[in-house]
Length: 261
Ligand code: OAD
Image 1 (cartoon, rainbow, N blue to C red):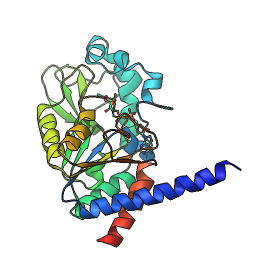
Image 2 (image 1 turned 180 degrees about the vertical axis):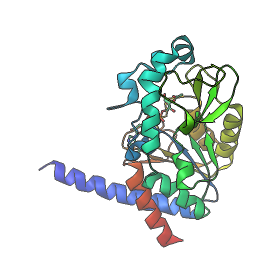
Image 3 (image 1 turned 180 degrees about the horizontal axis):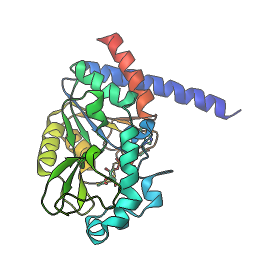
Image 4 (image 1 turned 135 degrees about the vertical axis):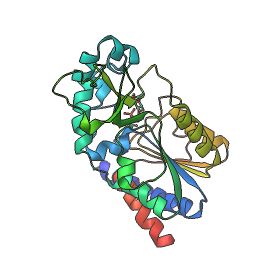
């Protein structure tokens, strides 16, 4: 019985915050989004942290550190990368990705900074996507540097090999590697010049990506989080948190925004 009023209150709060976000987007000049694994959960790609997260099964230092890959590429390919290829191949953009693409079409969102490597923002239609942690769409040979589309990689032999005999690795950033300098530079630039940042589906615990909302906030931007859970940004860096799933929440914000424009 007690749960009912609190559920109603939560729904009312969500609706109010969704209306607020639509108003903030309607009046902002230049919004930027920072996204994380949570935006792709509704596309059936598991997140890294939390219940059902990839790091629940695999210790990232043992499977996602560059030293781990260089020491035992067979282990990393078998445990992590082979499955990841199948999961990403099957995934389609959800209402979260489509909402951000629609915001670009409406002239409200310029750039998406994503920590994801799944390419779903581009598939949804966003044209300026900064891939902070690289992407899984391409692999390159550790020996000769030859680049190949992931779809063309033959997985009948693990680790997959280049015609030169070298091992293929994904064009993603492993732990222990630098963020691509252009991605870092452009992200800081986008964060420091926007007047609104949407932070969608990230636990905001991995640096330097999690610094981007701080850069935006310090430059005077409004920061809105969309996440079912609180994060270290909640209540400090973000102006408000809309506590919901990315797809549902962005679809609701978009329908409200289109009424206002
Ligand atoms: P995490 O797995 O750390 O966090 C996912 C976030 O998404 C959590 O805050 C969840 O509460 C939230 N979430 C879950 N379902 C959601 C939904 N349906 N809608 C919206 N949010 C939802 O993922 P990231 O923050 O992206 O790096 O992780 C950052 C980096 O850590 C990754 O890029 C990866 C990882 O280790 C590297 O591999 C270098």
